Length: 108
Image 1 (cartoon, one colour):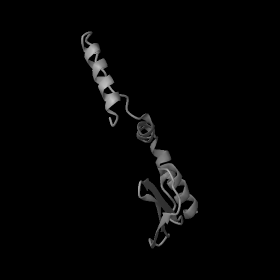
Image 2 (image 1 turned 135 degrees about the horizontal axis):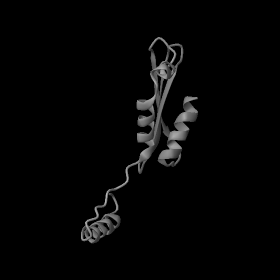
Image 3 (image 1 turned 180 degrees about the vertical axis):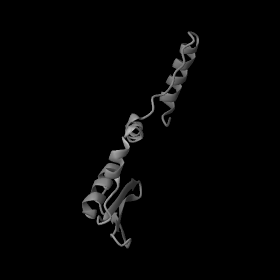
Image 4 (image 1 turned 90 degrees about the vertical axis):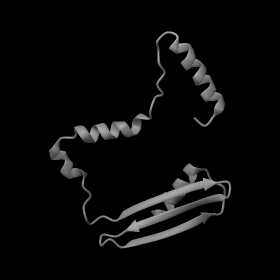
């Protein structure tokens, strides 16, 4: 936990709950686990559909923001495996999400 106020409050609650034989467990993010559970339970006949066709190009993007500025990077992989990479510094302030969106737009 990054906020000390929140961690202190949780510690106080954990102490109070322990008096009653109750334990606190933080709730993990469920989004990734749902996808993993889905893939594990996927019937074998559908696994063939999950593989990408070899004639597709693969676009990978990343954007980040800090106090020093924002930037994006783009990587495009051809069907032959050739990689095209490019990085840009954004000329305006952007949040992490905005930098990711800008990377996607630039990649497209």
